[in-house]
Image 1 (cartoon, rainbow, N blue to C red):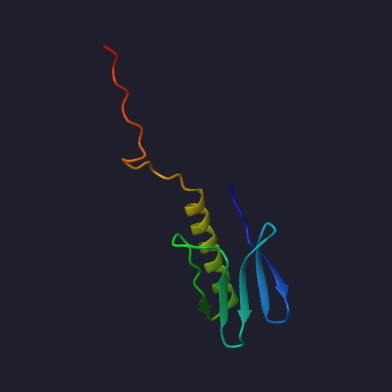
Image 2 (image 1 turned 60 degrees about the vertical axis):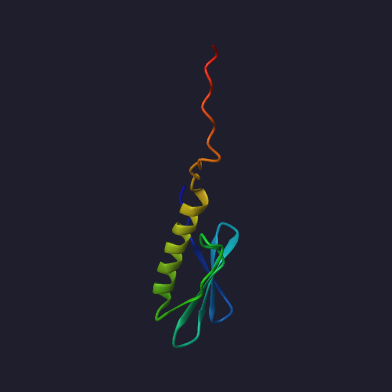
Length: 92
């Protein structure tokens, strides 16, 4: 499954990165730099604001963050020793 970010202008200095109907990113133009505000959590549950010299760099980073989010979100957890089923005993 492939999700794409659709960028929509909002106000004069802001673009929203939409994934489906979800606002996943914002890019704000400060005139001398662009700030990327991700709304998707990373594997630690945090979001990190990042600054870039161009909107293209910010959008490329947003694509990377979306891919990382989907990889983590759709990952199948490996069973731990505690959660693994015990081997069946043979009937005697």
